[in-house]
Image 1 (cartoon, rainbow, N blue to C red):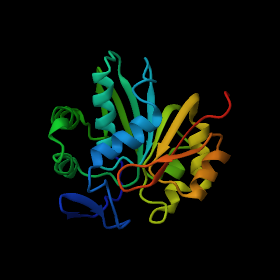
Image 2: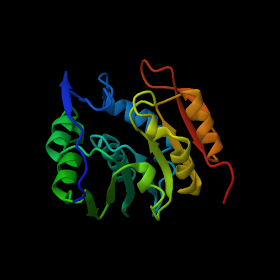
Image 3: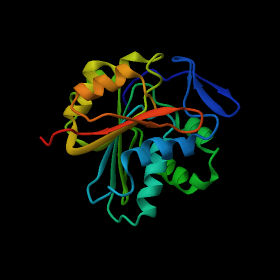
Image 4: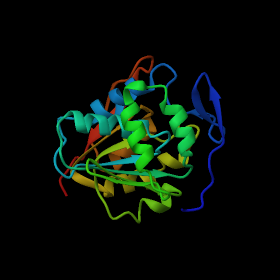
Length: 225
């Protein structure tokens, strides 16, 4: 396994909070509902699911987004494997993942299958899920990635707390590693992030956020490559 620095956690009302970035891993109100609203609906899923569909993610966190997507993939009747690649510098231990994900009993089947299949290198090879977590600084690892995503979950910690995950160079790499019909979604609506994504080749649209968050951002590739 790659040697990386694990993020120190504290738990606040059952929600893991990164001491490194002073930011929670998911919404205390309803993290699963937010994940579905922002990342699934924001990327027009499951309507765009097809054989060979691949999701790219910046910031794996607890794995909540992956489980929500995997559940939707199976519920939509897909028989092939969902591709899912996540870039994460501070991987959470499987034990902490299990503790965090226990908040959502409706995901228990997927949580158990995920943790049972998770390999020491943070990869999974199942009939309906091909997952890989690429460990390290995304600014260094994403440029070396050979894949392309059909949908991006841009879920790093807040741009104010973790600006490196939202740098111009990294957003450019997101664009370069996108299929010609790719989309993205993110909970942040910050103007400077929208401008970076537009510069990376996406149309950018500010839409209604989840719950108390007024806005979020979605988009798709502007020009076919």
